[in-house]
Length: 516
Ligand SMILES: Nc1ncnc2c1ncn2[C@@H]1O[C@H](COP(=O)(O)OP(=O)(O)OP(=O)(O)O)[C@@H](O)[C@H]1O
Image 1: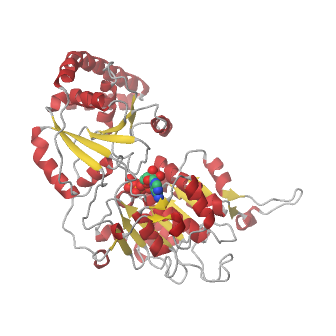
Image 2: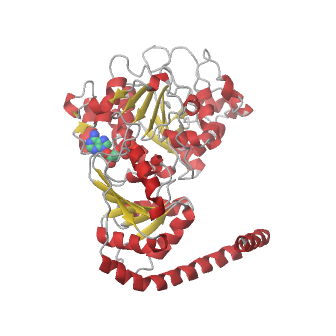
């Protein structure tokens, strides 16, 4: 999973004068201007008594005079509360709507992340009568459609022309949280699913969303939400499958029901990341309207204030031992261990589980697993039944799990952005957290550069007790032997399940790899 190299690209003019939200003070809810009292109660029920600085900054730009006049790009550290920063103003802005239709769409790269964001909306939106939907492929398409689209009550005995029905269909949700794949399924195939009333589009984890095309979901959504007057964006019309012509979901100009006779509001975009790209060609895909950048502090990248970084020197071949010793020293505090690939995640998790003395429940969490397995693991981790997740990078961006006190980089991250997102699973919402990185001496120089880019000035070395290392050394050979047996049995199982042709090519592949 490569991230683009940080090349010196020119910074766009609008990015040169950002609003620095670190200048905002936390704001107690009762002092927040214009906050709907019903939302105040909902927030209090969540245990929130004030808004974090980024939330105050976004509130100031979105509520009151000049509300939502410009698209917003928000670059703020991991765990600083970006989800509520967009969820609250959107819910407040929609709180006086009278007709239900899909007005806000939030798109995220993974299902678990979408579920997490949906929970935030679901905690506040019902307080003002808004309904939130989910399109992530968690359930069957039919089940999802039944929750998103309200079927008209048809009178028995009357024969209806099916072609007339789509006009009668209504959205059951005001706000939709989606992953790109399922969103595209609904756009192309779900009768009655329309983006013609959409007012707010949120692209969370923007840099990842822009790096991966995900079936051209973005140009599709942008074209379907442009008003007739604007016309389609020339460079993106080619993405649109011709079938969309018949859907007629391009936003109309004119007067909208439910907004007191005001004209259709223009689609507002909010894009967010802890490591927002500055690459003009990537940002151009968003077709931003007078964008305003909100950042935290002067540095390009920022780690959470209470994050402590540590390095741990060890020989490459002894890394598993050092990892087990670190986990022993952390006790039962929740921890996420990051590796560089899905394969090494699987092997490492299998191996550490062969150290019987480690009285921890350690589970794998990676893109190699089925979604249902991953979701089950994440639930157990949230509930504290699993204490350690061994994980690959792709799945953990944005993940917010209460009580994660430690992160271990088993493999040193190759990019500063990767370090920031991994370390950012701890030290969230003003809490303390630690990030340990295991290093071989050949990696030290590169790691120092990476820390510099991340704005980390201090990274003391962490040491594990030598007696615990010594006792682990005695178990290590048998753990390695068990790992070898397990890997062999898994490989032969896979070969048996695979069709003959692919078995042959796998065997040939193995042979040629061995020959190298
Ligand atoms: N006003 C608040 N008061 C107390 N806790 C809050 C508040 N706002 C958010 N939080 C908590 O802060 C944590 C981090 O929030 P969130 O997940 O939105 O961060 P983020 O900035 O999106 O992080 P990432 O970049 O990693 O996705 C969550 O557990 C959330 O419940």
